[in-house]
Image 1: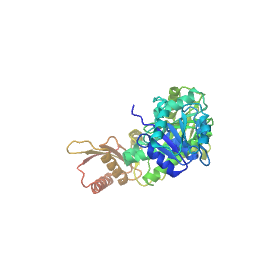
Image 2 (image 1 turned 90 degrees about the vertical axis):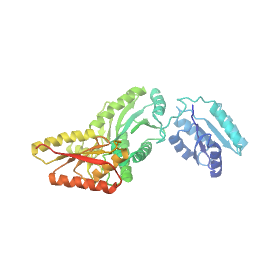
Image 3 (image 1 turned 120 degrees about the vertical axis):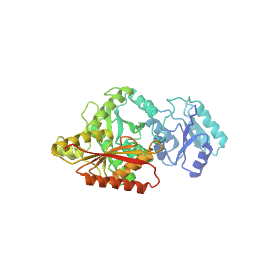
Length: 440
């Protein structure tokens, strides 16, 4: 198995820290910290396999760091090696009976340090329950890590809340702004989730835009609500920072929550209940949370008396400046909107138009994601904010124009064509369109 161990190096002397890291690099993955407090934070984010720490440091000593980590992560196996310049200090370390703790005297030779580390790590069997499986993009625990660490807590009956978190409408970020922006936002969202939970809690990225967290000791919905509000607020702030104030994607996070051990202690069963609860949140408007067995709460309830029209309008309203560009929807949402507008057009004789744009390469090659994203962006800025757009596939773009007539429709089509050709002068894509007015 080609697994490279990850070692956290902790030393308050910058030169010593840099030299030790240089010795280990190449053979091991390394992360580092200049003091015990920073090491606690780095350990939480990086999940190293071993800690190589200076013994005497100001603030938190190496021994105190070991004790604090063992107290915070009783379910984890954490090998330690201490670096010390004073042989008299070794007696403290020798008090540990387990073979996962050792010391080395400063200054040390590189080959001796590597051999001593090898001796510790060779005693560890490289297997799934010892390797902290991490998600390479975000640095959080991956699905395997979640099943291992959270399952241990649940099985032990540790009280808390099991939270399945999903990004709402994230697909539109990839469609409109490209996968690089999508990845950037996922990394930022992972940081937001981490900051919403404590160092003693566990946060994971399961897959795609699905995250999981276990918060020890949390038993009150008000606490969950604050976490949900914080996550949604910070996500919106970051999205506007990354994509600009004209961004009008209804980004948010929905959470399905299950109390442990009230609803059981089996990971798979708890996950299934969290999925069911998350689905309910998605159906009732997204951007909120629900607790298994309870009705849960939507964001915005605190601003108005529950059950009033003000509370409902608050939860339904857009949470950001809608800007001037068209309203973009995923295809399932677009379909629902089309059916409603078709009724309105017929019953109230409103002039509405359905447009379908199709992209093709003359040589038959498929339209790329980048080309589709570029054309979608052109559509979005060419239409009014009351118009509706979506992506049916990489080469098909449905549009609904509200309150329009033939002359305005022609103007829109010409505007889109001019903007596309102006921004893509070398493109060989052939664009065709179909037009149909709603029945009145």
